[in-house]
Length: 286
Image (cartoon, rainbow, N blue to C red; front, side, top):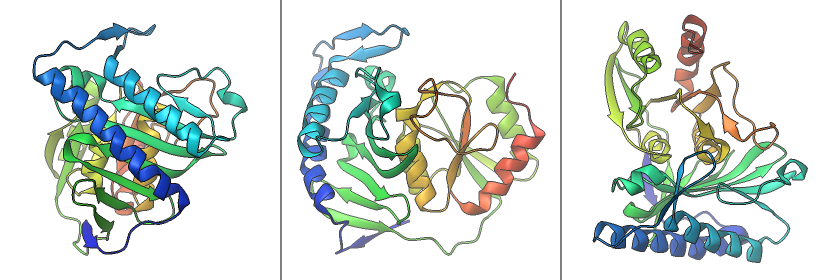
């Protein structure tokens, strides 16, 4: 849970990033409001047939330019950028300027901006911006995260709840999570728990986990590294985590591909044993 605080996360990097991220949030909000008001949205197809819009490209250009200005020695590994040299980068920003492009196109407001700093394959600093809520989740991996509201300039700090685990588990699913693998996952948990399913798009599910609204987030269809890096690190900072279907946390910018295989994210350290037990009992590869 987050509790209001008069303290804020500090540092030169944070001070430079805050106005940049607020402006990026406003730019993305403006694009969305123009679109839902009836203005045409330019939608193109990438080589993998996934959609990219004018909003993706506009926010990407703004953030890549600003990141180059404040951290000129850090390259940016972006969904919408040229990443052919990424294997030589020991440190880099990882960026998804519009995570949830399909949600955006379908006029669902569950889209985010994901930004993280990768150092030697690990995420050291993470931000998830939620433009439609005018707020962001931000933090370093080994510190409890903060939440910041742009319009009120209010900070919140994460605090662990003293509530004990109960018999209800909240499972976060994407709007397109219809395969039998998700049913297997839910049926396994249903033998011991009451299950509540909540659908949401993009990395917004990670934010819901930080807020205590989702306990488990299984994903058995493809994602990319910029979809998970910030969310994984924020969960790890509160004792949760994200593991592959082999039970191993993801590392970043060290594989031959930026595509992720399936994963299960969990919000509390107490859930880790249940995730590993579940992965031993069920084969999600088929």
